[in-house]
Length: 455
Figure (spheres, rainbow, N blue to C red):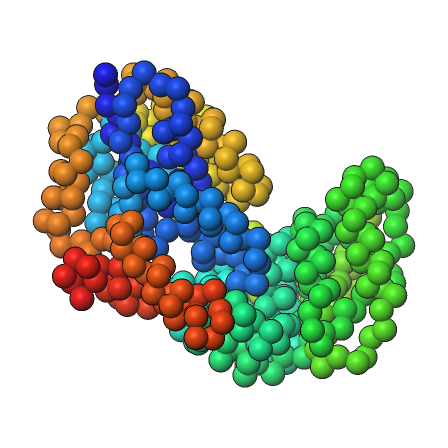
């Protein structure tokens, strides 16, 4: 029986689901899978891209953990593709590679003032409050009034974390430096701006409902945003999710305002025009008031408004990053592909041995369920793709370990993740918390490799 040696680059949900689906699929060959990630710990954006006060994420992590803990997938963490291991290396050791590297950069917002001090990408802020090892330990939380641009779930996560009192996060896995930073924040007002109306938002009802459950935070909505046009009324009547979102917002409109120390303002029909600066720092957000166009979109009204702020967060989407030696679509931030089979840029010619899944395949849209169906599509082509597989010179499982060792790569493995996992849980126990994340990369690696005689 043929034995497929497969590398998967990216140990988040997309990569883990792809490995699991392949191992469970009917096939005419044996398979051996190695999962690589640039971070010392697995789970990708589930660990580093979701606010720590989302308990349902634990269920996703438990499902991913079950897959890895079966023991039929090897994990190599703290390995950077392009430097520690290259595409040529993969060709020498594997028959194929699936890239599941996701989208971790902020999409651009092309308006004047984005370069001002106090203008931040939401992805960077999320990485900070999630304890990502590659971002600074401190975050400049000095603003009293903050703007968040975007009407998706990330915008709500960022807004909730800014407005929420730090002590209300103590039951979560929030790192100590993040708790101290948020506790010292002087914020009183967070303004969320969306270009379209309440019936066209991109966030989910669950995320929205959580926003209104914050302690000592008033929800401020504006009557002018709720004069619905026919298209919005139709959306509310015909789409259950939109209907639920409308009910939540209408309840918030009935709440009294003025008793809380912090306020969350929801502004709809606001098209970003400029981040206004003063002495090189964010001073205001300028936008054009829009109105419905009767087809579910909006058009500008010409009315310009300005809100004084001292910081602004751009939550307008994520964007993929190019990979060394792999075709990349700069416009969409993805690997050019046909159903997960990588293509040479600008053509339908297949790139032998290279596949993609998750956000680096389809862009940063969809939830976990989409990631599973995405992986199934890609794996179907992997299984049927013998003609485009590579012919590795060194296909043995030991040869990859020898390669990494010869280069002095301090990789982490599944046992190492268990070490780190148990260490973080132990850190949280005295405080009654699920865990306290270890943030510095070198500390993560040292704890993970402790049983290897490295620490």
